[in-house]
Amino acid sequence: MLESTDVELSGLPDDIDKSIICFVDAWRDACAQMDNGALPTRTVLSAERLRQWRDDICIYEYQPIREDFLVRIDAPSIIENNGESFQNSTPREIDLKYGTCLMAALLKTMRQKKPTFHYVRIVSASGEPRQWLRVLLPVQTFDRFGDPIDQILGVRFAYEPMHCI
Image (cartoon, rainbow, N blue to C red):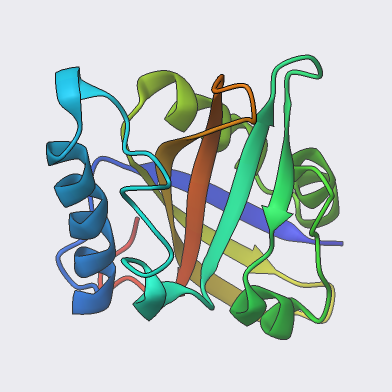
């Protein structure tokens, strides 16, 4: 049996690694390049721009017909840590397996069109605690007809808070 806790944070904690701040700042810089407050596109927030975090980024693509997301890319670092890949799965499957609230967090991030931050703690069946900071950033890409596709870039960083959350 897994025990899980997802806590949404109002912002990034003060005691996080600088690379996490740089990741969020890269998204904010991309937003500043967009017209009329539009979400950054994957063209502006390119793989080259995000190369420092390429092994840590998951891409969740919204599927409006199913009111669900699809894991387009599962981060190699997460696959290595979990020992399994959820690529081409849904966040609902992840939530069912780990008792998390990823699906709700993705929907909220997409609807608010701004980053969300979560402290996630899981205690596995073997009693092993895992703790991380989940950062979700909304972006857009376009299909072959030029229609927008909502995506969320998700990154999970190992994180143990200095104070109780």
